[in-house]
Image (cartoon, rainbow, N blue to C red):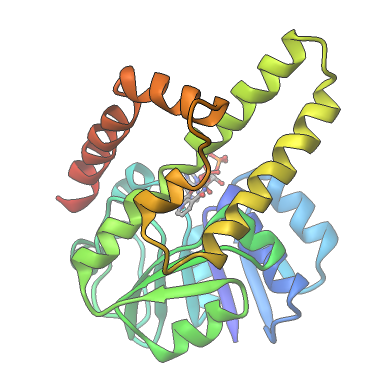
Length: 255
Ligand SMILES: NC(=O)c1ccc[n+]([C@@H]2O[C@H](COP(=O)([O-])OP(=O)(O)OC[C@H]3O[C@@H](n4cnc5c(N)ncnc54)[C@H](OP(=O)(O)O)[C@@H]3O)[C@@H](O)[C@H]2O)c1
């Protein structure tokens, strides 16, 4: 299997690292010098990685192509490239759907939309796939938990959730900052919050069949501090605003 990446940014780097961590059977990995820092790092670290001169050379040498560029760059460069009819293309561009991509690149063996997340670097995290495809499922199940579907709308709705990562981390940061301002070291704050979020995440996995409203309630004592903070945030319409904001992301993705 020879794999080529168009775009060597954050997610391409994480996928290549994850593939090595999980010792996946790959003959060669071709990348371009864009981004320079990432490509030099990957070439130095992994002997199967080669840096080629341009995107067309990457396509020429690979059976599987990862499109790890932004949608804006994709619209600019993809229709000028020659893809091969026997290539499998993994489309990672959030707002470019497979039908639109097909018009840009012409006939290939298959186009699969995939949403891995940066945690793939450690071989963990959810990975959304559309349409359902055995090869893609086998490939990505080595790198995380696959959520595949034959329904494109299902796929688009799960993609919306991938937009929550930075907001989650901003919530993490807000709490660490609060502790720091109160004199608790950043190191301790980060460690405490990491463990808190890790254990809460495990609770959600261990209680998957519990009614969600009851689940939220089970973490509040009447008159207690969890109830206090939640009531305050509900009063600000924090959660309604979050729902509305998810709708704005969905509008971009579903078009
Ligand atoms: N990050 C995520 O969690 C994530 C998850 C799922 C899907 N995605 C999708 O994956 C794509 C890439 O995201 P990212 O976070 O990895 O972005 P990124 O770090 O900005 O990477 C984009 C890469 O594209 C390169 N590039 C720009 N113009 C190019 C060209 N003409 N030819 C070849 N490469 C070019 C950039 O190189 P320079 O730095 O040299 O400009 C950079 O290496 C996006 O479509 C995004 O929606 C990302």
